[in-house]
Image 1: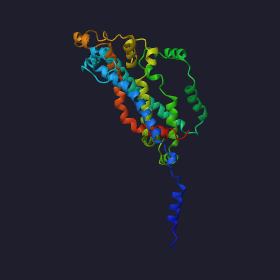
Image 2: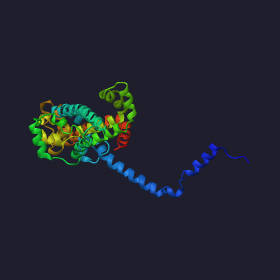
Image 3: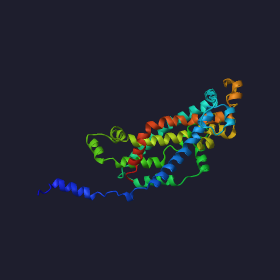
Image 4: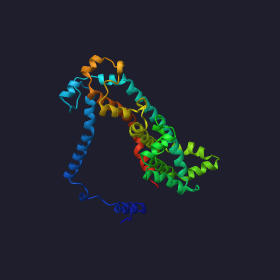
Amino acid sequence: MSTPSTSEAELVRSEEAVPRRSHLDRNPWWGDLIIHVVLVVLGLVTVLPMVNILARSLSTSASIAGNPLMLWPTSLTMEAYLYIFETPVLMRSFGITVFVTVVGTALNLFFTTTAAYGLSKTYIPGYRFLMWLVIVPMLFGAGLIPTYLLLKGLGLINSIWVLIIVGLVSPFNLILMRNFFWSLPAEIEESARIDGASDLQVLWHIVLPLSKPVIATIGLFYAVAHWNDFFTGLFFLTDSSKWPLQVVMRSIIIDQSMLGMGGGNAPNQDLQKIVVSADNIRAATIIFSIVPVLLAYPFLQRYFVKGIILGAVKG
């Protein structure tokens, strides 16, 4: 009788060491059924309101009055969207929001990246004090009135730049990116410094190319925050000509003052009095405001989970 070789014996021991999953560890069929039913219900609760809004934006006012809970557009019309594109107030606010999102996200990433890279070096003098300067504002806020007085002293009230300067660096995003930089092997940077690279060269040529997942994740956080920012424009911008899209949407949805926004430039005004109503324009404005985020998210989704996991490895 031949004895098994060493490799075969090790393979047998490794297989025996792996715990086998018995039928007792699996969910019963009714448990899986309950889980799937709950997930389907939650999915419908999330999706159906958006489907209703989309259907209302593509239907006539008479169809909406007859069936407000529609899930499919009836009497299909694009007049609400044509009205939006011909309305100066909405298009100006859309341009302001795009400018704030693009420029603000770029500045956010620049300052967050440079600060996070510096804080990832625990040997710098005053490291603990600097970390407390980041953590304390994340836990405690100064309040609305001190913030208003500060921005007024800086001359940012009624300036578009207040939408960018406020929240220029998020402490949560800073710590997340700092943890990612901290998790990178130190040997990579040491080898570059031996070759004569400076700190900026190491950051630009080595650290940033390895940090695409976390940069995409933090960039998505900042971009969505800028796009959906409502309170900053509401509190610090009294000039309605500088309002971002979300503040204008609030005026449309709550104040219901939208049919006069187009002025004399609104197309087919006689037809719109019949076809387009406040419900049409409210629904079309909501869809109009979320489409850019929906278009950008699929391209960044593959970085999203990876960036969060890698940024939370250390800390």
